Length: 115
Length: 109
Image 1 (cartoon, chains in turn red, green):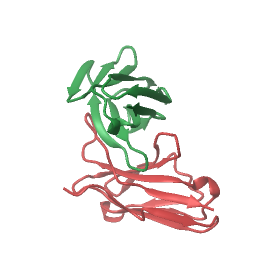
Image 2 (cartoon, rainbow over the protein chains, first blue to last red):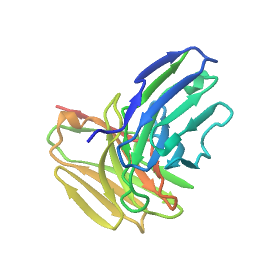
Image 3 (cartoon, each protein chain N blue to C red):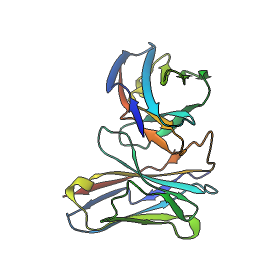
Image 4 (tube, chains in turn yellow, orange):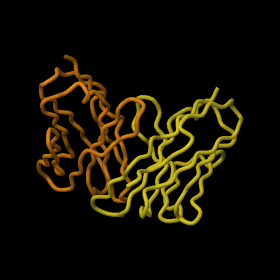
């Protein structure tokens, strides 16, 4: 079974430029998460989707970040414009069950460096 | 909200046993996860506890005490490849896992 797929794996951009990340969750997983992880820290939730509906986006900086999950499968996370402090790993994850044992599975991550 | 605390770094010797502790405060509780994360890689699932007690899975075991807000991950027969960051994550009332900062484990010969 294929895992969570993310692209690009690495991205270096200049500040004020836009960037987009793509995620394909595990087949059949209706819940999709975007986390951000800074060096030496644990992942922090940005947004969670149940199918195509964003059900928790309180931590998403909405002035520059946006996300969508059209058709309830693939998702994209966009930053426009990027700032130096956005340099981090952006992790996509998915799970299949809300409730006990809601194990989430992560993709390899998209490593963003803003210069 | 949730507050999760775990040591920043631990060192241990190959072949030994190490225990990584995690304490938490949460409004609502629906389970605790442990993940392993090697440098430059994504976190991978190790264990899930929702009831008090010990869950054993090969060389790794995880313990939970809900009344104390406490969990530990026990690694036996340490190998060099066990050098990684170990993340404790608590699933609160919203069923969204919130992660701690992670414990960096260094295994030396």
